[in-house]
Length: 460
Ligand SMILES: Cc1ncc(C[n+]2csc(CCOP(=O)(O)OP(=O)(O)O)c2C)c(N)n1
Image (spheres, rainbow, N blue to C red):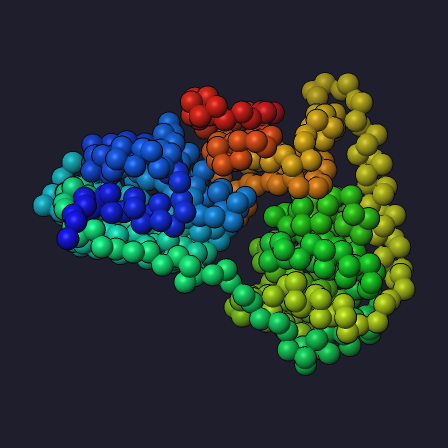
């Protein structure tokens, strides 16, 4: 049987899953894996970040934009501890990613050794799955398991590799089975739930829609639904971009970040079609007696943020399509007419500041330039701070533009790693890194990484 180093076997599994790059920062406790990275230099890019947190955030941002998981690593002790922020970002935004964490040699564990801490206990909470290899033979098995668990549980999986196992020779006979894990195929709604939804829609006076990331692939159906049933659309912050910002029935994000129209419409509705949306702030919105038709693929979400009248355990696209086909076209409700006018007024008010020369500078003239200059397929990597409010209100998303931010964990310093990720994964697309001075300062060392990889980004 051909033999292979434990760490080489790990990279082989990662490569066989179609992953061709890893973010990380070297360390002596990880020399076995650094050696493997050198062995794989013709197949896999090693993107050497200047801070392990940047690698973890870049890996966390990857699935949010590409739909493929990212991989990062950190060496034992401090290099491992620097990963936590990225892992929590992925955990809260339900983003598959894998972190490979080095540990001191097995003979040095649990004896208060240099750079040793109880990694498996600490990473358990920061991940959806965490295991430390108990033998070198387990390394490829656990690496494969980590990838499958990350995809299945939609979050960060952590595999901890003691340095000595990475050097050990093991049989080179592990084969990955990635084709046995096709994309999720969520169910169609039951006929009963569709009938109940249609009935509620018919009876409602002022129906609305409230969409979240679960509606990500159902943008066309959301628009068709809104046009047929005359439902103003509101979204969570992360739901921005599912329908283009200028779609007339789109009111924007509800709450502090969003336009006035969304805030006003949510308070006046008597029926909400609530699609794939688990925004924690939504406990604050909508009249308590408003009826809700909730569409989600996770049974635990029904009634979590507002009481639910019809629970549709179904794929958003299929559920919306079924209601569109079964329901009767509605005429414009009083709320619908007011909502469209409200949004137009808001846009006109924002536009009135486009040419402002006030000091300190207002955001509107800056975002006007961004909107005019950005390519139709630009990617926006957005940090945390006022840039969230401004991008939410003023960034005019359209065509094939994409954006990402740190949603629920909301960590400053997200912009640069996400921009690095986007510019390396999509070298032909324009990438904008948008951050306040504080968020920029937290990760500005990654400009060096971007320069190294010729990753061009525009910064504001
Ligand atoms: C790592 C981290 N530390 C602190 C915070 C809390 N926080 C959120 S926004 C913000 C200020 C951001 O400042 P800056 O990047 O300069 O942008 P501004 O909002 O001032 O435009 C702070 C401290 C956070 N979200 N993440």
